[in-house]
Amino acid sequence: MDTIKIEGSPKTPAVFFDAVAGHLEIKGRSIPENSIEFYKPLVDWLDAYASTAKPVTNVNVQLEYFNTSSSKCILDVFKKLESIHNGGSSQITINWHYEQDDEDMLEAGEDYQAIINVPFKMVEIEEE
View 1 (cartoon, rainbow, N blue to C red):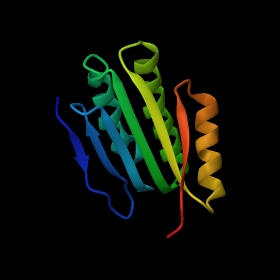
View 2: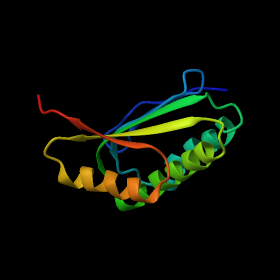
View 3: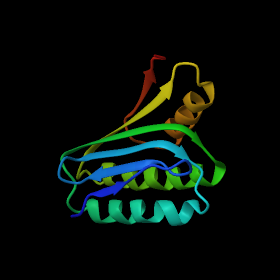
């Protein structure tokens, strides 16, 4: 299974999905022109990963900002992870990183945590 590696840009997050390590990462800003087009390969990749998932999968999400259409697509990614988790093929943990003063990102993470039935950890990033 191929690794997904997408370089981040001012409008799209960096993405690194590594099936061999069971490590998934989304980091940066998510305001793409077409969110569905950007996130569809990630959801498709997770469909394929479901059948070969590692026993433990760690997901790190560290977004500094995302728009409304991205929030729906991120939820689609989380729902796919939830179905893999509930299927029993992998113990998934989502680590939601947010900056110390960023109440909006903390709340967004808490909203996802309330919707998704997957272990969800809030990870505060200390200001440098």
